[in-house]
Amino acid sequence: MNKEPLVKQAYEVAKERFAEIGVDTENVLQQLQDFHLSLHCWQADDVHGFEVQAGALSGGIQSTGDFPGAARNIDQLRQDILKAKSLIPGSHRLNLHEIYGDFQGKVVDRDEVTVDYFKSWIEWGKANDTKLDFNSTSFSHPKSGNLTLANPDKGIRDFWIEHTKRCRDIANAMGEAQGDPCIMNLWVHDGCKDVSVNHMMYRTILKQSLDEIFAKEQPWMKDSIEGKVFGIGLESFTVGSHDFYTAYAAQNNKILTIDTGHYHPTEMPGDKVSAVLPFIKELMLHVSRPVRWDSDHVTIQDDPTQDLFNEIVRADALNRVHYGLDFFDGSINRIAAYIIGSRSAQKCMTRALLEPRKAISDLELAGQGYKVLGIIEEQKCMPWQAVYDEFCVRNNVPVGQDWMQEVDVYEKAVTSKR
Ligand code: RNT
Ligand code: ZN
Image 1 (cartoon, rainbow, N blue to C red):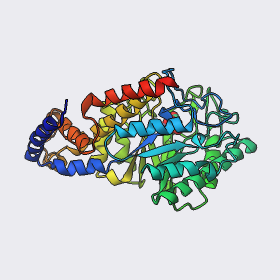
Image 2: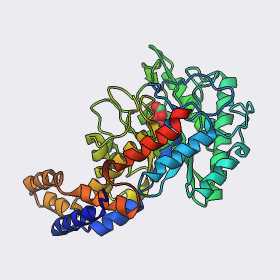
Image 3: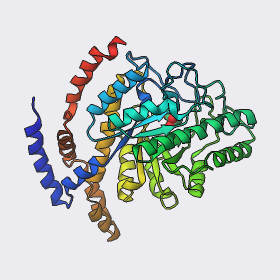
Image 4: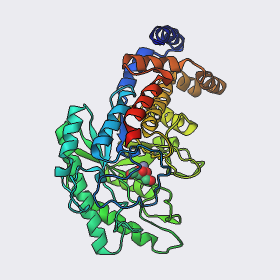
């Protein structure tokens, strides 16, 4: 069924309903067009990567499930990403990890990596109108252990410092080639499984390693740093905690990454936004979904995600936030995972942008508390989905669940044959 005429009608009604409360839906559609996600490459293959010498996933993270069709090589991964992107409205970036280099069958250790192994990615990005972001990779390696950049063993620590410095060079080259800074995220799993006493020492070492890594000026890349509560097997202590990186980012002018799976279960990641933005210029998000722990389930329109985007819009911080995704569910169709996660994030942003911000802010300042509460509650039933549908139509992607047919065709023709 061609839904376009119905979508148009519904949009016209929505436009009037929102205009009545002072919200311009055309303006919101423009803002949505400027809302770029950075799709994480690692949902396509359960965080495996293309190292010839690749071992099992380690570093306190886990992808569970063995749904058939995971990308097994660089061509398959690129094909999957393009398929997913074709069913997500808007234009989006791709976030690569170092282990996804084009190694051409060569064993390249992490302290040997250079931009040569990412040349084909840079070309692919240009050819497919996709800007790249980057990540150093300290997990899934014989030297990963429990401690990398915070390791008191100088040999191991220097190995990871060298790796991370090289990754910054690669990110810088990507940024320069695309004429737009590449954001390089740094997350290391360093921590302790059980009671430990040298916390100050580990954190002091991590700080020193970061200082050394960040010493080189890199004009075409930006550093973001990501903390965490705990990892599997490292439950008792995390060197790079949220507090550690918040302080480091504030003092050293770095981007702070907020991964929605990295906080205590009742802690709201959205509340971090206005708490850190007076001190930190920019944020990177890893939008994910923790089910009981940092399980990295596919993003949905849940309360924490909605609250996070509301807080960004209410803080007038849209241009200070970068929007990465970070989930890796190996138990379902992986193309669908990208589409569901991305479209859910966009829907949360649509709702956030459609809020009559000025009006409720004024009411709050005028002491009209019940009206603030009332409008926010009524807002949940406003026809926001008609605006999102219109966004899909204008971007030539299927409306509603119609994308599923294309995923099924692709599964049958491509992923199920792997
Ligand atoms: C792990 C962090 C980190 C990773 C990726 C693969 O808990 O969230 O961002 O998910 O680097
Ligand atoms: Zn993350």
